[in-house]
Image 1 (tube, rainbow, N blue to C red):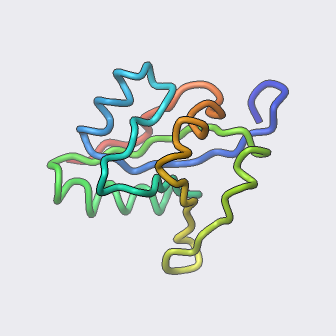
Image 2 (tube, rainbow, N blue to C red):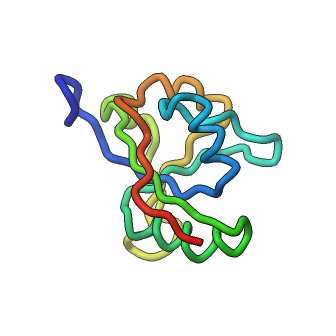
Length: 117
């Protein structure tokens, strides 16, 4: 929990291009999705984010990063947790057209917690 608002910690594996856009946004928001990206997928645990950043982002972009950020828990209740594989492969599916509103509920800054090359 951050301040007086209950928050939920989310993780996002990302490549260098998306991370540069987050930096440009002052570490406070995720950039709009590209046309071929109709969903924004934050994940619910660090281990899953590490696996994606290390095993997928590095292979496709040369580098992978894990970010951690807080979002108001009450707002997140609109997004059911999706199990995308095993028991710990949990993520939220945020439609691209809702990303600006999602960003407005981020509390604090997006932080890089791991880097893989």
